Length: 232
Image 1 (cartoon, rainbow, N blue to C red):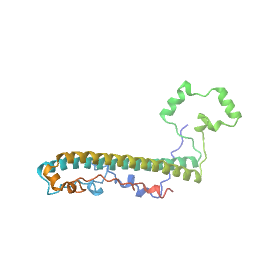
Image 2 (cartoon, rainbow, N blue to C red):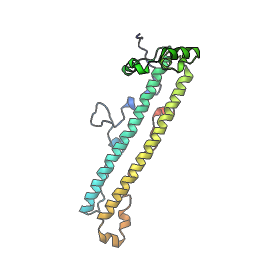
Image 3 (cartoon, rainbow, N blue to C red):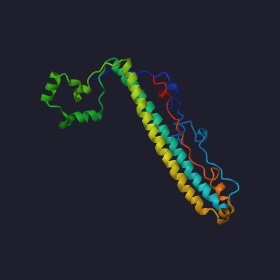
Image 4 (cartoon, rainbow, N blue to C red):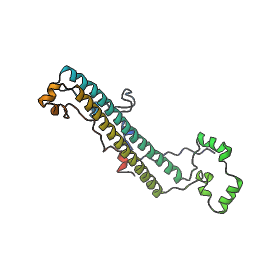
């Protein structure tokens, strides 16, 4: 049975989200999808130092291209997680609005196929025992029944969502930090291999291994959505 459309409640801070502002870099070439450029986020290609010879200048340029691509990829990965969290919050608000009027959980095509599968149909004996033991809500049929939501339910759902995506953000930070350290170590070995011997003997090798000549991809560990600190 079809139900009337239930307009979901719009969160009070929806206008401040990345989804609404379109300040993401997922598709920088499609201007209709995003108004953000890499330069506006501080992602730029570094200019090579002027005191390098032609050979080291070429190596620096190639390594900077690798670092630039990693900065872009890391930024896109963080933005995908933020957008996923914002969409999850909107779904929770929609579920809360539907539950407040005691509406059935909508079926999807995958749910319909699952119900038609003979191995997923509970037997009559299982249904009768569930009704007798008052365990119908724990069965597959009971999960699709009606559920009356309240204000505490949406708060609990939002807290669970924040904890879930906070854990995912920590995992992304650790992985990106590992990738940054790995790239820096590999580029350092290549850089050492191509440093002229006269620079090694003159003691200039320490300056050639500094941050000026071997920049490192820094990880932004403080990224998150506006709802992480203000969920309701």
